[in-house]
Image (cartoon, rainbow over all chains, first blue to last red; front, side, top):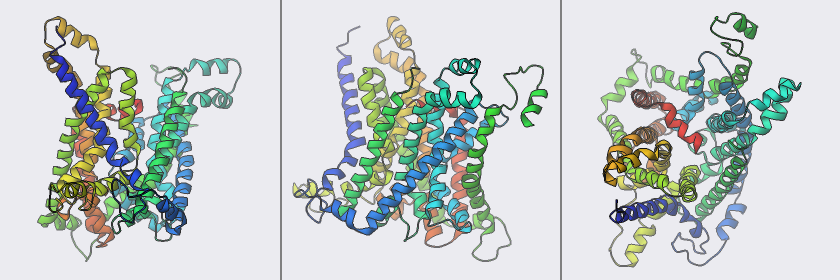
Length: 265
Length: 300
């Protein structure tokens, strides 16, 4: 059993892995330095350094209201999806009822149904309910898309927690509500918070459903970007992209840290 | 009431802790109602529109389907969607399997870094990533500018608005969906098996091919299925990186509904896309447990 002939094969594997990491990360990260260009054209490497495109993003009402709209929608979505998702996780993990498999399928199906179908479906229904072009319609739509991520996170926490702790609390005289509030909730909180962050990210980055449910007067940042990307070559889009990436990455790392706080499995 | 009945009505086999319906189940009611109202009903409405919305009065409920399949161009869109989805799956498998294998054999700390390298892009905006590809591939993009400056080419080579461009963008975005299920399965393979094969005299590659590879196949199937199904529904990436020749089903649906205002044909195509997705999932469910496909995301 000599390892020597194996070495080149392992080297090849490592090289391929490094190349894959490059393929996954580098193409996206390229917009970051380009967004700081001083020139009117998008070039790599950027010509000169300036924050003028960020200034334009903040001062141009189209971009700045888009930014605010996105933040509002994502925040409300995160709250609604976290509540509904946590209930769904408790109901399906702890609950016993006929048709549980079908319910699990329904909860996860927003992940697998092609988003364009969801978009035109929601559009045709929401138009009749007169909630297109409004924050309400978009929050409801994004919540449906975000719930599965909360359920998955909370369900994982629920399955890994020690139920003896709940029984101990109850045998010491705590009622069901108090047991939930003082024992269960703190134990699954990392999963709940991580789920909420994922829900925020889902809404923050969502484009396709938003294209159909927003209007010229109410647009989110990704929709504004979608409109611009197809017409003009303006480095502001690179600045917006960098902003979207920065927010997502920060929240994602936060979600990983939060989940690490989970009690020992 | 419901709870009481389920308790008294329990069969002799069930004990008090295992009723047919327990109290926890009630918590699932609000989220289910929400998803039915704002997710399921929209899907049902779309399906109905394919047999009720006609540009001019039609006697036949399936007139839209006839209209759709009568046009060779429409059928070509279907064929192209399948082709692009299959190609993306192959590219993702070729890159994803070795990557998952590498994650499985390196030290845990490095495996964690490799996992983050997959998860960061997995969660970052699809639109931003597609835009970045646009910036790289277009005629005045990074690659063409570089090659022109080096005088290696005289005029920009076509990279954007080609199938190659779509493939690059789509496989980069879909790669995590291949890596995660494969890695989840590989992690469960007992290293003793390959060690035993080696002890019995199998050269390392034979041990891999005869023992490890077959054991990892459920992951390969799950990942390929997921990538293929998701690729079928891609919209943003082919719209920004592809040519009209590369039109995929989702783009067809969007333009039917937004530009031609032809909801009949748009919803017909949506039903066909939905049917394809469900068929692929159904066929696959006979070979693999769909739980494994989605389960891998719970661990990641």
